[in-house]
Amino acid sequence: MPETPGSGSAAPQEVAEAMYDAMLRSDRDTLAAIASPGIRIRVTDALPGGGADPGLAGFAAFFKKTFHMIESRIETDRLFEEGGQVVAVGRTQGAGRGTGGPFDSAVVHVFTVEEGRIVGFDAYGEAGPIATPIDATARRTDTGP
Image 1 (cartoon, rainbow, N blue to C red):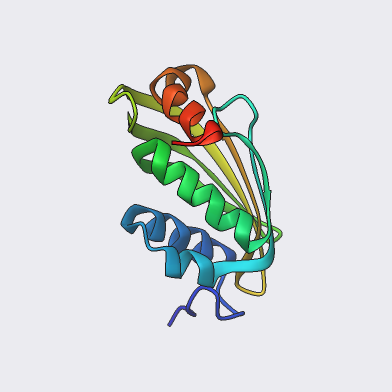
Image 2: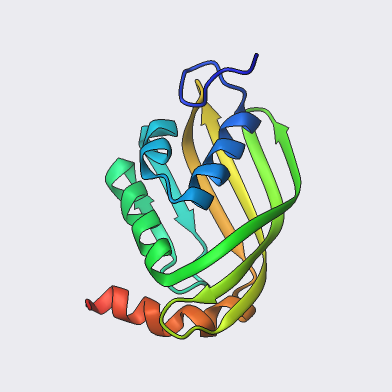
């Protein structure tokens, strides 16, 4: 039987899959349980709202910002593990919350997992298709409501 993600002995790929499942449900408690207190998040600067968010507070801020900017679903085409890192290749499809504009963008996520918890999350996305639908919302997030 697979171990529970965040338990210390869950396989890295199980932890990555648990994160996607929790994101789909907007389950912040599960997201917090599978994140290491020292987690490091980096989203390509090419995307609105991109940058680095350190620690659990940064992890929570990243998801709050993301959930505020977009409504989307991530579909992974490939998910593979190598040496404690999990690479996910797929697409994110949805709409910008502020504009309603649709997007369909290629994404690559790299998870670094230690002892059943995510210690690093790097997100890369095809900026062109996603930037315009979320740009107005991102600007409001950066400057306040």
